[in-house]
Every structure is written in structure tokens, then in C-alpha cells.
Length: 100
Image 1 (tube, rainbow, N blue to C red):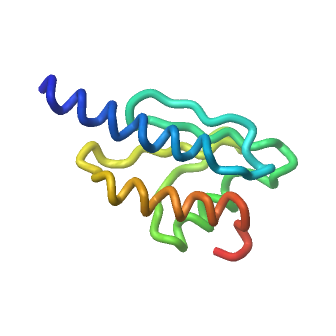
Image 2: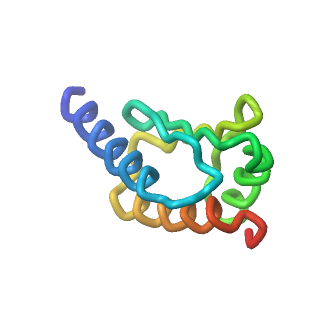
């Protein structure tokens, strides 16, 4: 159990760090603990739903919460390669959601 906790904390830190590196005017704040992460958007970004839809079209499932927040909670067994792939999808969707 301790090994699993260490692993998901490491994967969460990798995902959180990667999301923080995305340069999008829509993003107000990225926060999280372990693999539970939230991306808060500026109100003028047009709501989280459009970004969740763009991510879904790219193969990433997430949930819009409180109008301006994207909730990300990948499975605990996610791999480094899957996180790296997901970060590419987040970068594309957060910078150009209409391109879906």
C-alpha cells in the first residue's frame, strides 16, 4: 500500500507540473493533490464544458465543475507515458478548444 501511495503521488506530481507548464490565457490556476487535480479557468474563457468536450474528442475524460473548473482524476494505474500523452492533449485543448 505504501508503494502504491508513493507511485500515485509521483504520477500526480508529474501531471500537475506538466499542467502548470501549459501557457493558456484561459487558465487561472492549477491545483491538486495526488491524482485529483483541478484546472480553474478565467470566467471569460467561456466555461469548462467546452474544454471538457474538446478533451473528450481527444480521448481524455474529465468533468466540468462549478462552471469554470475542469476536474481531472485519472486512474491510479496511469503510466508516465499516458500522462505525457494526456499533457499533449491538455495543451492542445486549453490553447485551441475549438479545434477539438
